[in-house]
View (cartoon, rainbow, N blue to C red):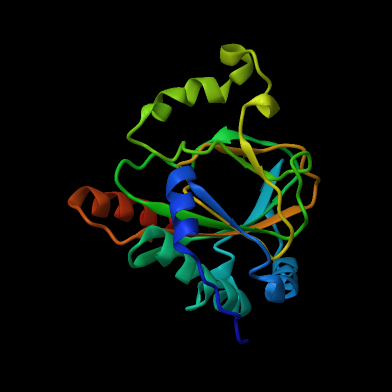
Length: 223
């Protein structure tokens, strides 16, 4: 399978660094049927609201090619993180409910990129990924917002859906690349909202970064 090229402009890199996410429209239109078929070949397991296939890309020869080989996702990760990258892991997930405001981990030094693809069109009221821009900046005051975002009704007098955020409305074939330390959520999704993810880490530059990378890799190996 020959993959179409992917290019990212300097302005797009700047947007990612500023806001913590980048939406690339239609860059994988050519492989949506392949990804959808591969997803259907695996039984999904898990709790109510979230069922999935752990490490789905490694379990499918086709997905290894379209998600992990030297194609668009790894090149995108290297471009946005500005360094060589290490593949951490990825899942295939089917959601049937809301995912509330959260971050994926709390690494103090490790720089990560999560690339998400949805297999259904999603709008702000039908399960689109919502991101609070700028909350990927871990050296800022956002770290103090954990309690408020875990229970915005109690602390802020707002429903989860009222928290100011950007809804990344997408169609199959789009890539959404974001720093998983950003606060993100989704609301209103159907019972067939399918998602594939791949996560990459920037090349470690310090002893602390190497320790965090080792711990993260260990966590993924047990999934």
